[in-house]
Length: 407
Image (tube, rainbow, N blue to C red; front, side, top):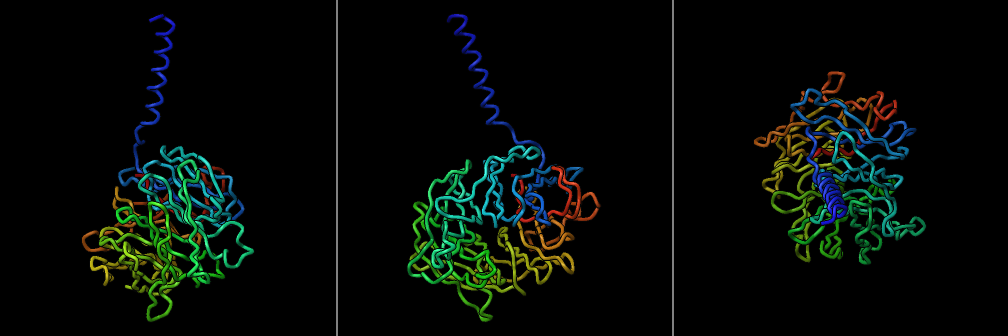
């Protein structure tokens, strides 16, 4: 082989190996919690906070870094519920209808990959669930430019999006048999074994808050809408209102938390006649994100200033097994499970005094306790979003919402 050709081959081999090493770089040591937050005063921008979530670390519970966006805070809202394998995390500011995709593969040096607003004729994305192929399936609350059309304004759609922020496919959730119903997609659960998706319809607008009362069943393989149905109405005529987060139960049925503090259970999802039943009602209203761990459902319940845990082993007859009150004023909202450290994260953005906690769930009894070792620099359990100097140069009070652990 000529000397030049040999040298060129060696150089190409070097860069090939180097590129492979970048793609296959090992996961950095440590364990982290990402909290999506904004400026409570809405004068500065949305940001991603990185907190040490390794119980063995000397800085457990401490803020490590932040990543600022160029988006002035309007309503910082959902992230994904669990960290995707790709390390590309979706998060939105709902009221401006903008979604960010963050590269968090190096947790201490997160990067903004891209952002998007309208997608495939739909606006205001709300929730993101991963598909078996690694793409995101997102709920969009509205059809584009539908504000002047009172009928179209009540419908939206599902959009499949890849990690580069590009549309793969989409589908409208409009149903001619429900032309007068509010059909604004809120959240969803993916059921690959059944080739199904179940989505809920609930509005983020105060004027429509009590109008969401339906769910929809889709075929996952082609996003064909198969069924729109009403939720079961309970004795108080309220607990079915504003269905929000659907979660897959241990028996294969779907449990849906409602803003009206009900738990609806959907069965027969793979048939032409799925059925919903109101199986439990929590005290109060404005219940937030629920998490299912094994045969326990953990529900944030503002009326008790904490959480109620249900045993759903008998799926048709859930029973309360524990409660955890965090203070006399705490109003929890977001919850998310960390299978690595067996902890739940709980956030509240109601007041500057509300902290972000990690909770321990006893998987034998369902008892829930605060992890007292997870402490901020003030020495108190939980992480504080009260006024501080944030690493990205912002000084003020943060308003947290979505939170997710590294894998």
